[in-house]
Amino acid sequence: MGKGAGRRDRRQAARVARERQMRARAQAAARRRQLGLVGGAVALAVLVVALLIYANRPGQAEEIEARTGEYPTVPQAGRVLGDANAPVTVVEYGDYQCPGCGQFATESEDDLVEDYVATGRVRYEYRDFAFLGDRTLDRTPVPGATPGTDDYRDESTRAAEAAACAADQGRFWDVHATLFASQSGENEGAFEDDRLRAVADAVGLDRAAFDACFDGRVKLGEILAMKEEARAIPVPSTPGFVVNGQLIDYRGYDSLTAAIDAALGGQS
Image: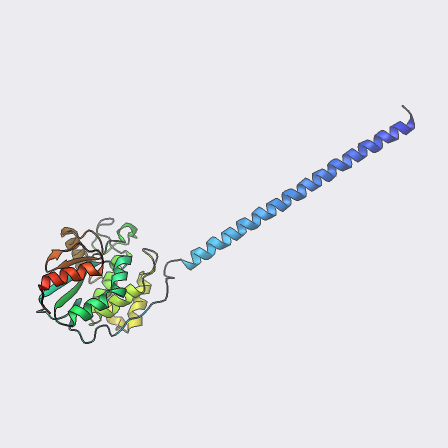
């Protein structure tokens, strides 16, 4: 083989080698771009998740909608509204985390009070069936409690305790209305202890008296007893209504007024 042929072969080999190197560099660059895109997407996803966690972290619920001066012209006795001698008694069993209870409280309760309670025909009582938080016990022992059994420190129970403590100051219905107006998901921090204390402040409760009651769990036994009472009836879901001692098939406000009107027997 001549010298010219040898040079050609060397040039050809060098060209092939360069082409291979160029292809290798191009492939490496493409991989880097791909990894960069993937990494950017992962970083963006992590950022989005972090923002969602931050936005929904416990205690960061929507702003408290304080309700004060609820039903000032209607007789009140703790968790009871209306004339003690009214011919019809309506008892609602509810949970402050229950969306349906919140809907009734914000959309229908005023009508019930205006049309029936304020007119002296109905005595209306709200009783706690605080069950939605049962699965989220934080296992913080109540003094004397058996962990995992009667260790109730969930959001439903604590919200009910807050309203019951407010009743000692004659403000049950203000806190009741504020809790329902300030719902924000179930078991997501809307009714953790700090936010319930903020509710007390928002409606203007005596904080020292409230804290003594709330932190001392003075109302816990009362709340648990009402829950067992609801289960014994048994109330199938919340809100549940008992009219003159009879559990009704509640299917919305019209079903409640129908039961009340039947119990009134045509009384105006």
